[in-house]
View 1 (cartoon, helix red, strand yellow):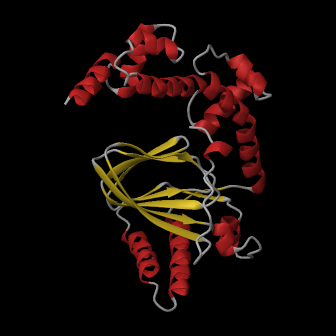
View 2 (tube, one colour):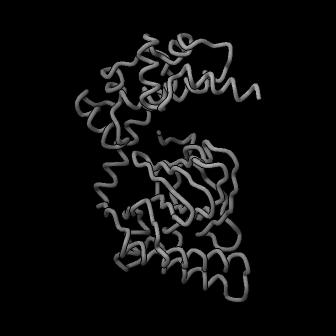
View 3 (cartoon, helix red, strand yellow):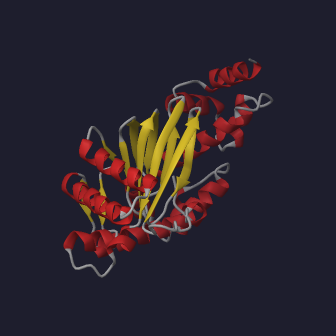
Length: 291
């Protein structure tokens, strides 16, 4: 997963409460529900029905009905429906706009400057569920004073997160260093996406990032939670999965098309990562289409 301007999701501000955006989504059929994107706001997935896999950069979290998935500011994320039907609320919260960057309160100041990161899963937490339901109900009914009720509930939500789900606090310098490293790797990710079918060398990619090979490999793994080789192979396998849906392609043709020079190695890697051999995967797809 990579974060760049192309998948930066910037949604127009809602007319009622500019710091908060609430939508309800229903999806049928397993697979990618929300593609990779990132934004400055925090985001919550409140799962009403079904199950899903939430990916936040290097972290993968399984969500079930009643769970709350928490996405921190500036985190690259995606959501995959792992069941037949998925129903969820998506709540986006701009802490900087809500709390004002000049706030003198300690935690409010940290939240406004996006220096706090929370754990990604809240499960069996009736306090948080009740707070979210209050926000959803107030937003739906919009009775007199609902703006104040929502603001109070949001502040209550943030207090509960600080007390029970705090993962880390960045210093401004550490956050800036992390963001700078991500910007250095941006051109590398763009290059990999454009040339994944070709041989890719660590030395050339490190040169593009203006880093030594050892520093480049350490930085890449720290930010993306996986080695460079695993990232490239995962991207190639995702592309291969798309090509396998074409009944006219062979396994060898698919392997070569996505950058693998050895079809046997491709088949072993595909089975290890996907849990099914590419030949069997292809047969299942053809069988489904013929029904």
